[in-house]
Amino acid sequence: MEKNYYVCTGCGMLCDDIEVDVENNKINKVYTACRIGVAHMKDGKESAAFLVDNKPVDETTAISEAATILKNAKNPLIFGLGTSSNEAQKLAIELAKKTSATLDDASSFSLGEVIEALLNNKTKVCTLDDVRNKADVSIFWGTDPSDSHPRQLSKYAYFPRGTEKQRGWEEERTAICIDVRKSHTAKICGNYFFQIPPGGDAEFIDALIAALAGKLPKTSYNFPPKRILELANILKGAKFGVVFAGRGLVYSLDNLEPLIRLMNALNEKANFHLVPMIRQYNTRGFNENLFKETGYVNSVKFEDGTVKHGPEYSVVESLKEKTVDAALIIGSDPFSILPRSIAKNLLEVPVIVLDPCETLTSRNAKVYISTAIDGVESGGSAIRMDGVKVDFKPAVETKRPSDETVLKKIMEAL
Ligand code: SF4
Image (cartoon, rainbow, N blue to C red; front, side, top):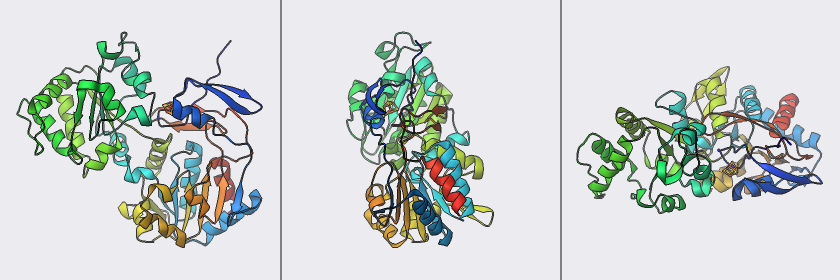
């Protein structure tokens, strides 16, 4: 019998080999997924919630209230969309154009710069399937996939057998971790864990580049030069290497220049690729969809048929400087992810929230619509963290509308 596989939208890996047992429109068992994926797949709810001022209303009233807020705003903020399908993201871009909105996602304070560099061909890229089939050296830098993307090492980077890596694991692969703390991933990497001090990434990069060129590597924090030289020797011998860049690395750098310089130095001696460790399942989709439309991956403002871009149009600066007069938050919880001093400015403007879960932000919103969970209750497509397009379908039915449906209705009501 042909197996029926689902896609897990629990993280940016979009594992497409998930099997589920469904009984009475409820997912009872999830096979193959990691612990995050199992909880995510079981998170569906049949009933919808439409709230205005925290009181239940019907769908038409909620949509009409949301449309009125956006119509009356001069500069609304549209933010989030990391857990929305490509189809919903494209509608949000259209909505931003129609309402002269500021549009941003969490990548403006996360891995947006890395994705922008990849889309601008600043370094070599590869797919996760290439990693499984060919990679002999993987570097996890400022990321702990054992916690954030639990199947990363077993499905792609370390343990699996690939077409050109038949034996898998330590026999044919080396996993290296560079981080400020001994994470779960660092423990798996054993002797190949390089612990650096917070903020020490740029210096470590310089030292590694020196070591790759055969010079004595030096750091102000006296990292043993012998160990950096040993690391450089492993990297020089890589036939297919991958740097998995995490938030820890990007937060520590003022800009991406040192990382791109390292990738160039690695590629003078070996064959290295860069893959961003993206947490939300379709952050990359948002970045790519916006890039195709505007040439930017985040932080834009649409006005009179033109698009402006800059840090002043990021969610953080827009809220800090109070330049926006309404907000549509989709699949995100600024009250949980932004500093309180910045998020609290949302209390001064009318806020619309679309989210499968009630959040701190939704509890303070003028309009809240509980939307379907993509990949569990609604279908669509997304871009995996390595840039591969993945289609997904729902496993159960719900009365909750998808982000795509709600955005379509808001557009019609404008
Ligand atoms: Fe889902 Fe990510 Fe776990 Fe794969 S690794 S099953 S996509 S949460």
